[in-house]
Length: 348
Image 1: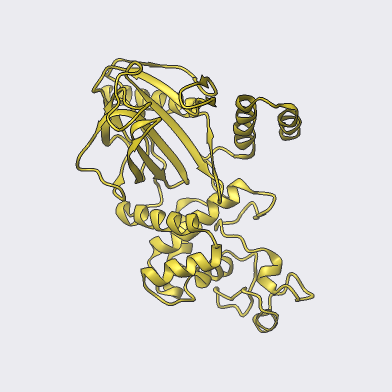
Image 2: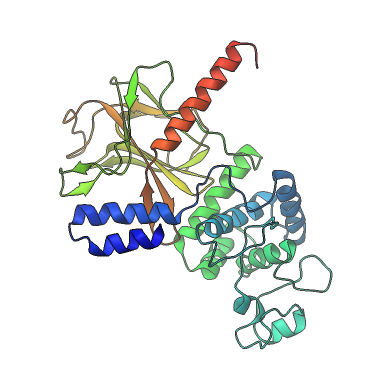
């Protein structure tokens, strides 16, 4: 499928079609986020994080945040970052970086020779071996690299930058740490439909539809039509990353979740005043209200019927790509309706 999409993209010339092909390619490369793990359950992961936290002196939440960022990158690039089917950690270190670029043994496990050749591999399990295939050794090595500037939030931010050479990585680890610290659990996979189920709304897949205002572009999301002022809810556990005006989206808010997805809510009539950039929210939390803002200067309203524009973007390391959120919305809506019916029947 990927080869076919690539051939089609090369044949296209119109900017609208090229953008559509690029979005299709991005989704084709991206495994689904929900229900997908590297091969470990929550208990095994928590035990691993506690163990590495004890060695490094960090909180388990910070260790988990680093591993979660690594996990999101490993999911996106499974061929570039191969991990065993039974791997607990999502952390990956390339053989040449682990053993040292000039090391003749790419699978070297001896800490002394790894250090001699400038490799970063370390023994975290205490067995005298720096084994790149050992979850404790691998995660400890990555965490240790982020701590080379010393303890403390500022020094760790510098360490993250030096290891990843990417400001997005620094921000993501900090956001994931905040989420784990706020909720005290690794299980942050619950979602909610963005509008109350008892409200009047309608939606269908509008992904890729042509948009003309502001230049030729495509619709990167799903429009959910509802009355002015209907509450808009967070669909996920996440950190508020952006809040304010956008000339296309009007009053909009952006939330980053634990799977490194950016959830975009646009054309709002207003925000919940108690929510600020950097705040943590949970599924179902009201963040604003349906409106018709956008397509102009701050405060522009009424250029289209009231609706929520909902988009989702996946961080690919250096760039973000949108993908069609309609299947997720449909799934969350059905799951929430089933839960409501179950409670109504005394199912708790």
